[in-house]
Length: 463
Image (cartoon, rainbow, N blue to C red; front, side, top):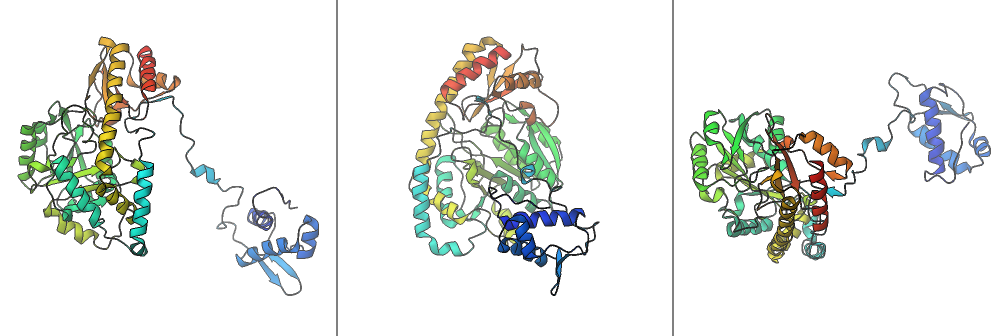
């Protein structure tokens, strides 16, 4: 009736337990059925008595069996309508797991980083040093707002390189932009309900605020940033913007528009969320200073991350709250535990204190600038006048407009996939409508120069 497999990694007693349990739950072993004795079952299976006794004892402990003195074990009566699922009907654990990632020879996803960019050895040294220094702190919870040393390092870096003027007290360490926006949505929702987002623009803020029951108002993006006239005409009281390198078009908001946006926020207690996600990667001239630095005391929530330069896997980001929101934040989150590992925070602080962070930025800027220039050169060589590039000069992607092609974005993406090319749909950034011209988004961070040139060559033949 039961079969044990000695080559199976599952222990023998567990194999027997599983099979008997399966028979009970499926009704093959009705209630009050007497099981063979431990001795008889062991002989039948050519197994040890310990194997059989272990399976019986576990089934008895879980209520599948009951015993009678000097009579042995019997099947318990179960209500089949509420009995747990049988093992054969239970989904395999693999059913819950995603399939293996698609293997693309040319991956133009805009969020890919250089495969060998992570400073493994330096990070390991900082990690070990942090572990040595902070072993006593690892048995307790840290500050829910984030490690003070890391906040001080971030404050110094932001003031020096991004023109952000704040105190460490205003900085909150988060596990990525998603959590930052979740916090902002929570602390503002009592007095705000409408959020303006760039169109086209990053999809994540839309979904986060929608999940908090906010109304989303898409505002068109012009070459000088979000359309201020459209914004002022809306009933929005929160505006999410990427002023230093608009995602996805790469536009830079000029200072006159920045000041006008700040004045919009100052009138009526409105708020600006400034996402400065890849501001360090500017390849010509100095990085554009932050919006927050123009009005440090204004209603501006500044958000930054280590994901685009260092590693998205670390889940390390930060935001700067204006003092007008700190009291509300602390009231809402004073009993929360930290969302980022203290050891990772201390490692990052040590990484910054040693000067590794800014050296890493300079190194990555050189690497990505070369890739950026090769991409532009490849587009010029293979597409010529058939393509118009916008958003170049910064970040990890460019936008390619194809005014003369008869193919749609969906058709190009499908054909590219057949050739081993991965493209991220530019249409995903649009809240309403679609671009009039077929438009592609080309990330270059995750490929070497040869792959970039080869992928563009194939793509030009498809388009």
